[in-house]
Length: 110
Image (cartoon, rainbow, N blue to C red; front, side, top):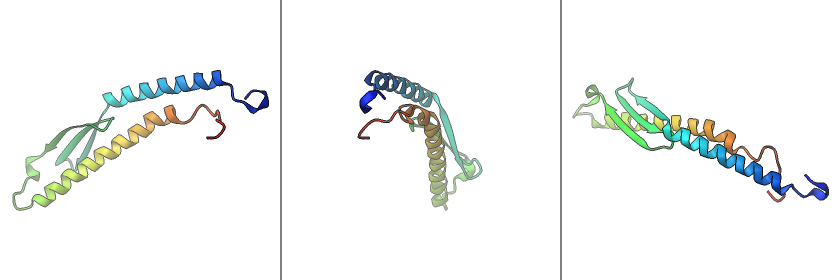
């Protein structure tokens, strides 16, 4: 901070630009990442990108029982939740450092 308690605007702008670059890099890495969620010991598999776009659902024929569709529905939902959790964790890992603030710089009024 400069004398008088005023933040250095040039320093703030540099930090903001650096943070913007880190966010863009993290987003690019997330877009390329593919995460897998499974349920039923692998009977249902869901693939999702790091940005949360679901790419595929695979269902092992052993999971298909016309008399018990509810179990299959539960397995699909569980695999989706599993994949979504993996995606959330990866997003936190990649985006956390990029959005963790302005390098310890405090902004008045925030």
